[in-house]
Length: 335
Image 1 (cartoon, rainbow, N blue to C red):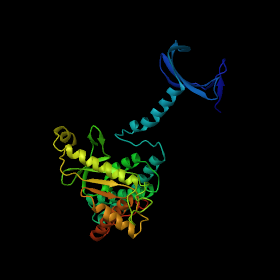
Image 2 (cartoon, one colour; image 1 turned 180 degrees about the vertical axis):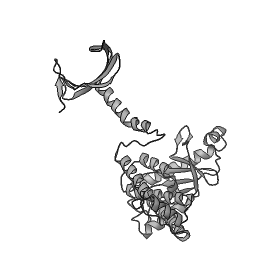
Image 3 (cartoon, one colour; image 1 turned 60 degrees about the vertical axis):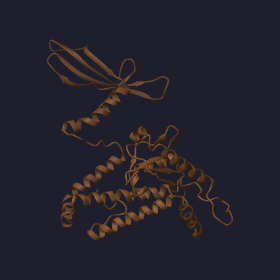
Image 4 (cartoon, rainbow, N blue to C red; image 1 turned 135 degrees about the vertical axis):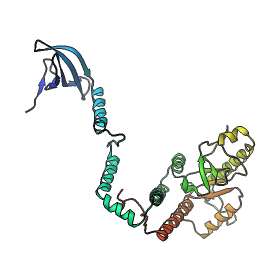
């Protein structure tokens, strides 16, 4: 039975561990528990020593000695746990199992290896090529993003959250946009949520507001629905952005900064929700949008419905062209 001993000063320590013995020196490790008078916690330190051997007699006189503090010891343990086995197995890259997500990923890969013959057979039977697999994976990711989008619409997230979300899921803004430009600054005083490059190669603007903002005013004007004060402010902001960016159309520095031309820019304003609208509000919305030549207003529900239609079309095409069934989520996949 192992035993925790106690030094003359009353410090508990583990049985010393001989790490190696050579002709003239031996190396030894001792773990010890260091209590603190002012706090409830304790530290564990590690003393590493290399000691002399004279005429085959071992002494306690250290040739060299090092005591690692609790912090140093924990960092050393983490370092060894992370890199020892990858180095031993001569791995080039590896995944550290640090949390439940990593464990789940490892188990999924393990399941793939168990079923690799069945997977290979299915790929051969369906004559799947690399682009087919990429299409399926892309569709799965987009379906998951849509589920997240639909859930988050009901939460009171701020504009910063949605700016980041759309930056990670650019495709949901619409197929007319080629890419989001890294630069967001129109000029020294105006910064848009997104400057985007449309498929025609020119700059457009995307402005993001919260879905929780009210779209219509509480009261009508001559029996007509009118935009809420928040929506009016957002529309004016978009119009100011369009005006300012058109002023920059001939500014060489701005064009070099954006790396694309500015010709009659358009703006997409994402604002509020429309799921509960009746026919009268939908008609008012269509009239409102038709009054602008270079501004389009879409609610979060409009974006969601449009994205769902895109995904349904993709899935319909896949069902027509092959036997592939794209699941709503990845629970039924072997990876």
